[in-house]
Amino acid sequence: MNEFHPLSSTDAYHETTKHSWISVRQHAYTLDWSTQPSTYKRYPVDFPRISLLEENPIKRFLYRVAGITAKKSYPGVEYYLRTNPSAGALYPNEVYFQARGVEGFADGIYHLEVASSSAVLLRSIDESEGLEAALEDSRRRRGLLLFVSGIYWRSSWKYRDRAFRYVLLDAGHLLGSSEAAVLLWKKDYRIRYRIDREGLNRFFGFGREEGMLSAFDLSTPESEEVRLPKGSLRQTDPTGSFEPNEWIEAVYRESGHLQVCHDECRVPQLPFEREAWAEAILRRRSIRQFSRRSISKEELVQILDWAQAPVPSDCDETVELYGVINRVEGMEPGLVKEGEYLKRGDFSNKAGYLCLEQGLGSESAVTFFLVSSGRNYALLYQKAGLIGHRLYLAATVLGIGASGIGAYYDDEVREFLGTEGKILYAFAIGR
Ligand SMILES: Cc1cc2nc3c(=O)[nH]c(=O)nc-3n(C[C@H](O)[C@H](O)[C@H](O)COP(=O)(O)O)c2cc1C
Image 1 (tube, rainbow, N blue to C red):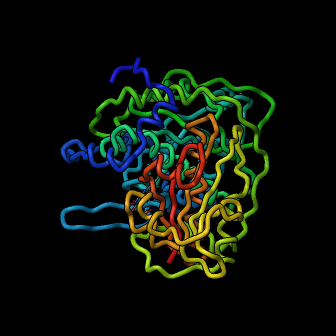
Image 2: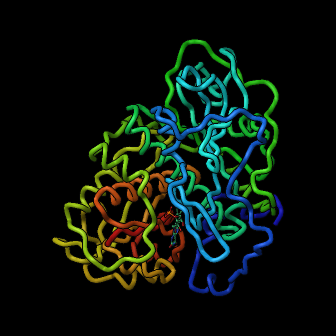
């Protein structure tokens, strides 16, 4: 596909990457294991590293954002799972951060190296320069400033054109894991989508395979402005193989032009007990199969209260949550939106079918669909991922299983819900 593809807009991208019963059967694709991209980016060994596995609140915070928490072994394959989930465990994102005036860290720009649970110092900064210059307000800031990038080939290797959706959802989960971790440590945070992506991509020395998506701001502004550090960082291959997808790249570029949205300043309070929350961050996993046991209405209300709390950001749009109630004590089965029944009846088989015939959708207590009619594709998808992360953690605290579901029959879900919005994500919780 070339760059001037007539469908190179986010709407057309969404439209054309919809799954349907027919598309899934017509476009079956065999994975080429010889080109499987690496899920870890590693800078050369001569860059200084700081271990995050030490008792220090900031190191604990950074470890909780994307640390390795489990190892899976199958004959001939071994892989590691992290605090953040990822479609197909392909982890198509990286996290970088700037520390200024942060104990235990020289002022500088770092990469969060998941493979070694360490922070890699990429470049020191002085008081006149910094990544603040890539924010709308380029005043110098003290504290941590995290940046999430996307590396689409890690995901498009398997999911082809639909991969950009997963890159964004997984980025949203990283914003969600950052939020979850910060609530244990510090009160204020803000997600920033209004960033100078091009300036950052140039400074980080990214090739076309990697691009910045958003920032998670934990810093406090001062009065003087700073400029972006001069030059650019040494380029490092993030995948080991690469197959360009010009369409995804065009949609990435277009999704950087933000349209009307509003500033959300409300920062939510953690509604769960701290110890249980800290444990849930490390225990979170995707359930592979439910045993069809129910959850209580009170549990559902607690999970929803957290999932629907405000998401502080510089560009917010509404993401709605529809729930197919399959097994909730004290609630009739049916389709619910914001506490109101849209349809009554047992739709568990329908929900499973809509999630590409996955048992997760039918055997759950509740199968959610996240929907939006907003205009800003990249942030809507990231917000949906963040809400998904809230669902994971609230369910985990309550001893309830959960899984993100990125595969669903888009138009059939819309028809079932009776909405014109885009279906961004599906999600199942249950026992
Ligand atoms: C965006 C997204 C989509 C996912 N879609 C599915 C899905 O359709 N079916 C499924 O069984 N698991 C799905 N998962 C769960 C992943 O397979 C899981 O996160 C990954 O294997 C890592 O395991 P963990 O979540 O236990 O750490 C999805 C996860 C995410 C974040």
